[in-house]
Amino acid sequence: MKPEEKRALQIKACQIRMGIIEGVHAAKSGHPGGSLSIADVLAYLYFKELNIDPADPHKKNRDLMILSKGHTAPGLYSALANRGYFPVEHLKTLRKLDSDLQGHPDMKHTPGVDMSSGSLGQGISVATGAALSAKIDGDAFRVYAILGDGELEEGQVWEAAMFAGHKQLDTLCAIVDFNNLQIDGCLDEVNSPYPIAEKFKAFRWHVIEVDGHDFDQLDAAFAEARATKGKPTVIVMKTVKGKGVSFMENQVGWHGSAPNDEQYEIAMQELNAALAQLQA
Image 1 (tube, rainbow, N blue to C red):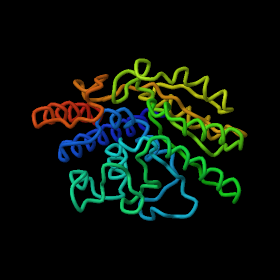
Image 2 (image 1 turned 180 degrees about the vertical axis):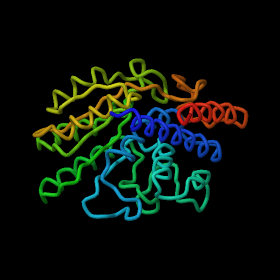
Image 3 (image 1 turned 90 degrees about the horizontal axis):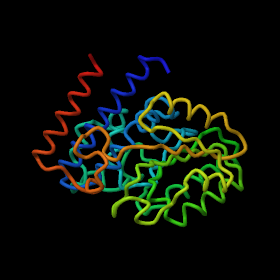
Image 4 (image 1 turned 90 degrees about the vertical axis):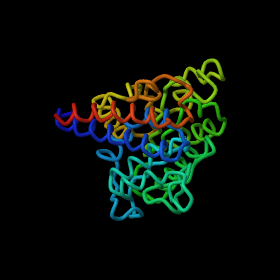
């Protein structure tokens, strides 16, 4: 990836993180930790990978992006806002009455949301169905789904994985946010889904493992996914929960907690400093 292209994506990722903090702070509730950990892949998807058009959110044969771990809606909303689906200022209405930015994504009310999600495991199942539909109809669009690593404890995920592998759905690309923390603690202490890569391989998926904060690795992984034929692809991203805000990083308590005013100021100072450095 060219240095200027990578820097542009790093800037977008930082702006997405700022929108996450703005929204969750204004709502006084939400899920910042897992939203921050996927900010980089959201920047890559919405500003490089996806065939989409904010001016026509429902255009035929657009690529689909389904947030299977729907509680990290603040991340998705910030990506959509920065991509131009609605004003960035609107992020401050998160979870407010009469806002179309609900606590979990709602495809009926929020521009750019391809699937309502919330109950873990259902998003990847819907993504599998969409990829099957594309294969039957001969459509060219691709389907992407972001899952949490704790979400892999849901049996429905593996039903979808089995089906997608059996049907050779090579336009399907699942992305696992492997930050090793879920609401109750570390994955291996709660209900270990390890080994993640080997499980997907057993269901006949092509597996790519990357650092989810490295844009060069993400760029190579998505190119490899597009080139893979005859089987679905899963990109297992090693990430840091709360990435970009020092006091949130690797802290399970920020799974579903909003920063107070003082914490908000510290977080925004850090992100503004990071943004200024990238733009220098």
